[in-house]
Length: 343
Image 1 (tube, one colour):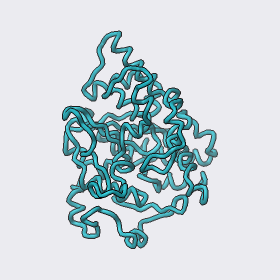
Image 2: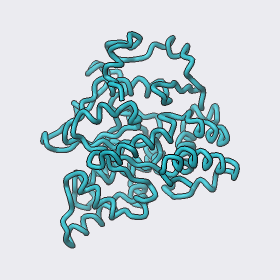
Image 3: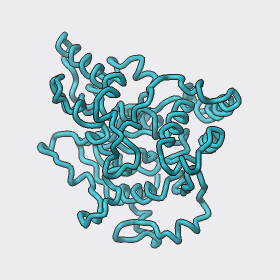
Image 4: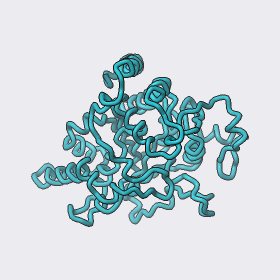
């Protein structure tokens, strides 16, 4: 893998001060494609980004310096990120199960900030070039883990992740459910209301990889391969397996993150508490998670992160020919690499 930090130094079209893209350079780029709501995606290092997330991704690669105790939650959009944020926070920052539990008062997106969609988004301030990087996160104890989320592909972020002893947890989800969840998520955008992203178009672009942070298949396979090469570094799991074996994965995640649960009845009770507190039923009933308010940096309401959380919901929205097309790509991309998943 090439050194991405060096790439940014060598390319003069990047602004040295804030890495923002020049509008003329973006609009004239041949590697762009319209996707929904009059928006364009731009191709960078083999992956597709919105203008904002391309800028923030470059900021992340230029400046992020993971600490030894950091935990990086990586994922493709709409694959269970919010759920894992809640679980990881509960494991690393245990709290008694009462009304003042952090997850009862805060949206998981606020407890575990995302690099390119939160911390590195320009907030229009003078602090640190207008955005707030992880160095400004309050860490009371240098040994205490920071949990940071990202959708950035391993192909782009790998050198940064491997520059420290940080841990990486990666979650993926059935491609059909991933697509349907993404499609629903975007329906709450005002841009989509003006220019609908039809399901047929969504299937076509997903299969071709032209969705934010896509191609989905390349994204998943790179993190999976790294988990096979370095299981002590990367913990890879699927949404479906997490739902079926929640307690088992919470226990294994505790071990992976260096905070194992006691092999006792008390330890089992703690695991049960985490599974219950982080369940879709519990989290979706919390007032802040039902709110139509938006965060300071994300345009969609908090409630948009909780819809159904069901496995196989795609059957209610995709036609047979759409399912067949996605399965065909899945067989080629996943099964062809020995990853028997997604069909």
